Length: 256
Ligand SMILES: [Zn+2]
Ligand SMILES: [Zn+2]
Image 1 (cartoon, protein in one colour):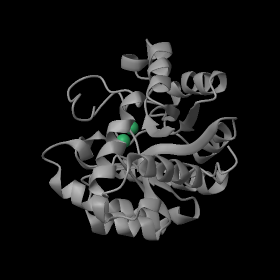
Image 2: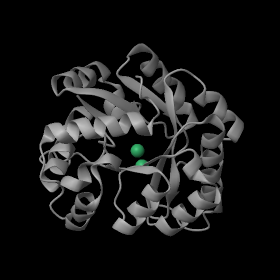
Image 3: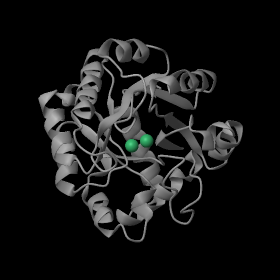
């Protein structure tokens, strides 16, 4: 069984065909998926699906790129994180690629999520793009390591990955690692220890090779697993077992 550690089942590309998405997951032996929240007004829909289908888990958080939406407080995140099936806080983090400075509000929002994760005792899902130095700095300042979690859709350097691992984080690779022009990222994936790796789709975006440009979905996570198997010169069954185990450790679900 494979696990998609990060997808967006509430996005319209997937939300209109959830039964199809779940059926294709089953056919591909993708047994679990974490449906990640990007705005608080998305949360109830995500939570409802997770409550009705045991293969789906939920997170709660507000994406660093989300604007014109309810700003989360520590109290609100902690309260929603206490609901059943909510296994993580996020996605949160910093993204200096999409939006221009001043982004103090984005850094403040990131700090709120880290404080909520520590208080709730739930791991973080961290998004970082063109902002790795500030991401690591704020993680240290706010003691994100006490919550742990994952650096998702990882596209940064080996040094950044190692710094996150040193804080107890896992590193998750998406379909980007299958792209032909992703040689540097493939080298990072190859260099990291198998017991810290997760796989994800970030669906509906970033469909892996050979589906680039199409709508992505959790069933396609096995293409990421195949790429990691190739890079680590091991079997896909090994990647399947190791990333499944890492998912359980990362999200404190050893008994699930
Ligand atoms: Zn993200
Ligand atoms: Zn995402």
